[in-house]
Amino acid sequence: MQRIMVIGVSAGAGKSTFARRLGEVANLPVHHLDAYFWKPGWIEADKKEFQLKQQELADGARWIIEGNYNSTAAIRLEACDTLIQLQLPLWRCVWRVFKRRIQYRKQARPDMAPGCPEKIDREFLKFIVTTYHSRQKSQQHLIEEFSKTSPEKQVYVLRTQKEIEAFLAQVGK
Image (cartoon, rainbow, N blue to C red; front, side, top):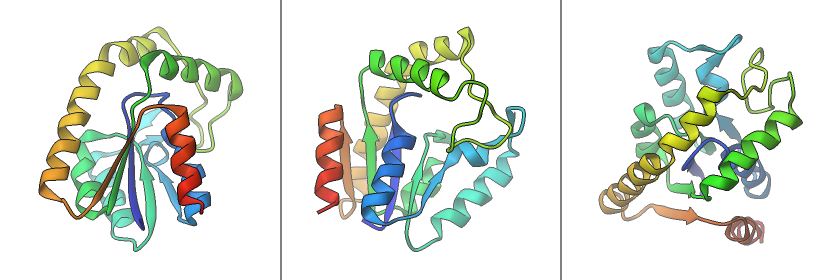
């Protein structure tokens, strides 16, 4: 595993934390797509700029790139040798969003662009709840297609914190 793509079923699935921990045990550089997509003040990056940055990252020899961003997933899918999906339950994702809001109150998370302080609002919660099941289905389809077209590449779906911990322990051996 030298080029790892990490996706998750929802905000709060633990993609950033997992990627950071995996980077430590696998000795790989970690790139958080949120840090490239968002500009200070929660302004979205230019689409072409965002695509070019991902291509630049994907062209690297060794990496972990975490984040969903389905519109640019093909760039990462083509380049990765391993795809890891975190598929934790909706309740845990929502709980983690509240937890990180408290933890990073009025400041940006380490995996976020500067000038984007942690926030939570009704619109964001609605987004999480209303897109969870459709994202789960679309990612399942993505994984199935990826497995068919790239059988030489590894795919892991981690559904519980226990599975995540076991995976990290195995990689760390």
